[in-house]
Image (tube, rainbow over all chains, first blue to last red; front, side):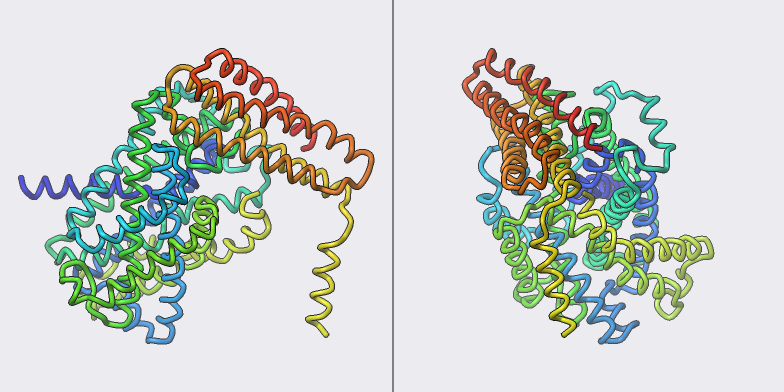
Amino acid sequence: MKRLLAVTLGILTAIGGFVDIGDLVANSETGARFGMRLAWVVVVGVIGICVYAEMSGRVAAVSGRPVFDLVRERLGPRVALANLAGSYLVTLLTLSAEIGGVALAIQLATSVHYLLWVPIAAFVLWVVLWRVKFEPMERVFGLAGLALVVFVVAFFALDPPWERLADQVTTFAPPPAEDWGTYGFFVVALFAAAMTPYEVFFFSSGAVEERWSRRDLATERVNVFVGFPLGGLLSLAIMACAAVVYEPAGIRVDALSQTALPVAMAFGKLGLAVVILGFFAATFGAALETGLSAGYTVAQYFGWQWGKLVRPRQAARFHVVVLVSILLGVALLLTTADPIAITEYSLVFSAVALPLTYLPILIVANDRDYLGDQVNGRFTNALGVTYLVIILVAAVAAVPLMFLTGMGG
Amino acid sequence: MGLGAVLLALVLIGVRPQTDDGFRSAVETGVQDAVSSVGTARLAGQTALRDGTFASYESTVLEDTRESVATALSDLAELPVPGQDSQKLRDEVLPLLQESVRQIGDLGTGLAEDDRATATEAVDGLAGTGEKLAAVLDGLR
């Protein structure tokens, strides 16, 4: 019974924790501009994050060591340092976007300008990272993120035009008002929203924090293969709500307030309150994960004591990196850079940085010295290599598409 | 030498006169932003009139949309006009953008002061302005 409860909680946390500011922005933007024509990208992205997270969770559970520790050992300190620089900068950009998302969510509830909330949100974030234990922190915000299920219910309540949406789902081309360059840009952005590198740093480091072993592999797989796809459904629901409300009117989405509006149209004030709570939980939870991930990557590379299982005094350098990362994220926002634009840049550069961590994980997952009999099977390897190709294509295309389309136009 | 040529090219690109095509493209971007903002304000206003939102959300949405149209308006007003066709296009679009900013402002005031008549009038006005802007956008594409 206790194990069933743990598995259920793990799945619910994975669902609620799946969506972050990148998913909120990218799915809503694409739903408004392309209807459901890019739904297939979410499916491809969710399968990709399942493959990636399962491999890194397995590596962490069997070897007892987190991602960056192995990356350095396997690639050597120089290559791993370049890897660290790329991954850290993308995580930092994502952290800034998440803090901006928290501030925007509070603005929707208070009408006080988000820039005034940024330092307060960052301070509370730091206090939670400093004081709260790993498991309750992960659980509370993951479960509160389930408030975003309201998008699924709102979609049905909006009386969707099923035939038109079905037609869009099976159309693999841009609508007449969009071109192929923009289509390609949003394919990359959506894919990156589903497969962000920090999720895997957090997932694998969390596995070490929670002392997973071979016995936990089944639980890990259930969390990944059930929780993440259900989280992907939330992403699709956000896209679908925008497709129903905005796409027919030719309205583009570039604000979090617009993402919430379809829910308010369906359920009024109560729905609006729930969706704003969901925004807050999703972005604050992701800010916790990215803040920790920033500390994990640096501390694991340099071999410092890290994590939340030890007292902050014993992992002082880890906590300094976390604090400095939060301050840098806040500094970026206080330049008045638009949090939605920061989110879009973080998605583009996530796509660029993804091969840096995916490839080493794929290599280690095939190494019997680390994993013994738990190395990748043929099927997992076929999927793993297929995704390596997809990830490389997305990484190469991301920056040219960004310039070509002016961030999607 | 090479760096000098690149810098010179960048300066020339920056100061080259605006063409009709460039002007048209800038107007298209501004009108698209306005279509999105006016449409969002209209939907938010309709939802608010059905008592479906609360004040903090309404003021945030309407401030976002008003700011977006105001930015499109000032960008377009400051753009050098390259020819008569562009002048005609500007004369068609600028009043619509000005009207949009005014109507979004009226909607915000109506909702804040619980003046349903003003808010309803603004929502109806936004529907009409939105249609006109959408027609201009179709013509530009």
